[in-house]
Image (cartoon, rainbow, N blue to C red; front, side, top):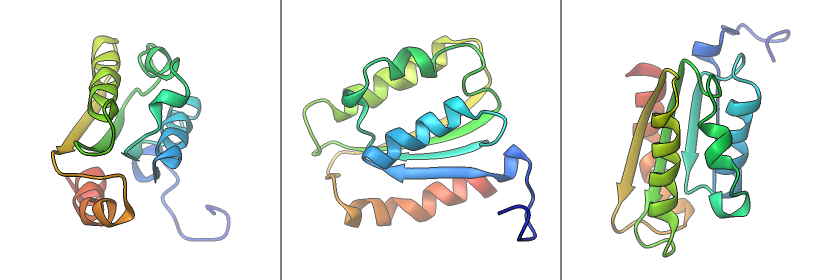
Length: 129
């Protein structure tokens, strides 16, 4: 992309994002390529699929100098909100500089309709806030 388009290739201008499994994959993109992605959008991530994600996200430097926006709905599953809170705790307990905005919509469901409502605020916070 950077070779074909006029972009700012630095990590503070580069983001990745997704919902559900895409949210988990986006989180891993940030963990595995911290030099590339400085903005990560994670909507309703499927954290239960890979329980080691909490430890990996909390490793020193995993999300260093990263802005992370996490959205979860209170009506998605019995564990969605507690799982994202556990993720937040793991990251905050590690010695790294990560700026996190966790948004929990008590009436949120696991649907594109809810994610589309949250998307503008997430992009605003990640790139302009």
